[in-house]
Image (cartoon, rainbow, N blue to C red; front, side):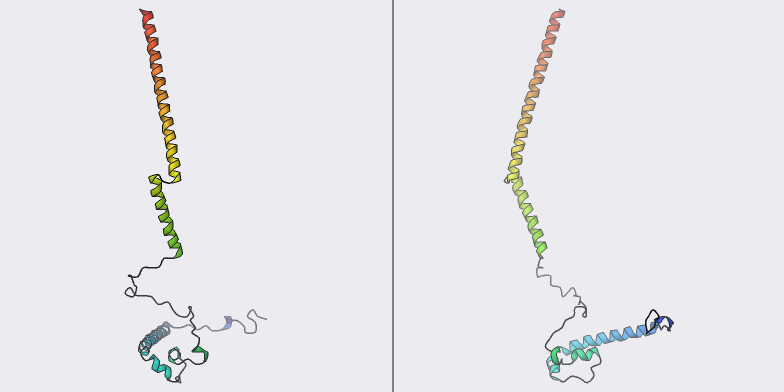
Length: 177
């Protein structure tokens, strides 16, 4: 049995290609259909109530007629929205409301609260009111005292050394005379 099964494969068939003129014609027809649909929606908005009372039209072949006709059966009861079917409508700059404050997400709110808490802590720390700041200040006081004691001790040793050297010079100068 061949690889494609009973149906066979496409390999022996003649391929057909769409000409560029035909593609252009299809795109123009689609663009015109969208324009007519947009005009139809704008014109149908005020007369929407009147069209619902009319019976369904006889030509239900096109999508335009399906969207305008009255829904029968369960179609009228259930509103179905397929997010993959409708395209996202882009907003114009004039439609965007800048006056209304934007709602922050939970993560954004938590991030802002964290930054504010950090700033408050740093202010208190610099003022010396936090436990860590008090411990740091106490440690600094101990270190200062140790350095002062070390400086005094060094001065005393230096004075003692100078006195000792002066005493030895005095003895040496007495012995030479």
